[in-house]
Picture 1 (cartoon, rainbow, N blue to C red):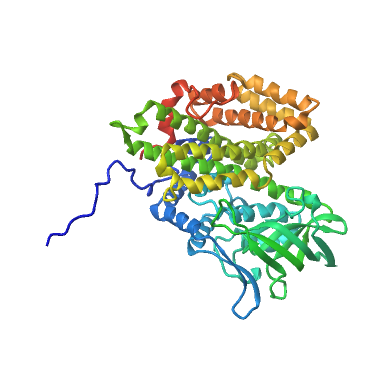
Picture 2 (cartoon, helix red, strand yellow):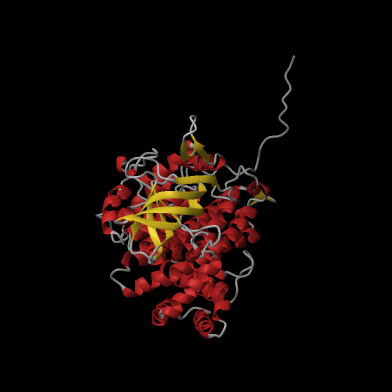
Length: 547
């Protein structure tokens, strides 16, 4: 008897899987931004090899697996002993191992680093974040921790060799038994959130720089790190401490994991609520100077927020371009449809500006010690970059999702994960109002520095449409009687001005002018509704280079 096929149709006009794509070689805006920052051809070849590894179908699928299998909290073992451990899916460990082998957690602190270490690292972090962002959290905190530990040279000398190591070690054992470590951060508490001066965790002095901490942290990400930089109230005021998971005698420290946060995104990474029960800690820096001690770490994590969000948007654009090149509607590829071309070109413009600014900010960290202007740029523009890039990311990823229609909305697509991931960087390390007010305070505290940064930005964009108006808007808002109410306005204008200046360094002139016309000279319209003039073709050609 003949068997009947139950196939109802052939599968036609579906986009092939996105994989085995070199995520850096296909990204002309990123390569140009890296080049203008001084990265030479040999270093660029290393970046291209990184792009090939992270764009492999296997690596992309590992990112999917890590997010589909979130971590689990194990407070006790089978005997009832307290262990306060988190179990991760093997895919998470694969990603962390790959990132640490490539030095994303420490390359800027290498003894023989190049003069472009921050830029080269930012390009890699940007690329990896688009593949899977959850594991970037401990990578970012480990990298940034050095800025805080530097306040205590003896403690830094003990930890830095293990931070620099490329050997990922996930074992839950004392740090001195490992060749490589990761470090986390815990600042916020239930009653204060961003207002860390409202922290109630108490630190009792024991001997030398040793203290006992009692209290809690409402958010502590990556709780399986080997130690955490935290803030607590010492007799002399709010102070920074280093809290290891194991006490010096080898016993488990009293860092009690209460539960894991059930988050919108960032699913592969564990974020926890914890309690300290006379937990052992080392003081970092002087008592009462906790915020000043940790601010360098915060500045580095804010840079990573901007870089990673730019990477998320870039991945969304790449997926939209890939779909548009293969999907046909009314006998024409989507990429050839005028309306879709305008949407993709507008997305590409936003992505290119974000990429240019993120790398420009990273460059300022490379040279800030030898250039006072670049140090001022890093202090003032980095938070503005975080503000603008991170807040725009969810909106732009939604637009990328819509380019795929229903295929972009279902969980088999990567875009829902990118979309859920997008808000976290705008919230972490200072939400919108906090960042805007920080910029305002910095400009008020060092008005001559702010004026210098504005002057240098204007030197790059003075002839472009809307530039002088943007600078005037910032100055007038700062001088107004209700400057605090205009903090977001100042942050947004500074972001767009800085992004335009960054584009002027690395993008073709018609792209920079299109951005100035549609973002500086007038408020940006809905994606796809901006008149980009002759920039449409180069934007599309640069956005996703066929190789």
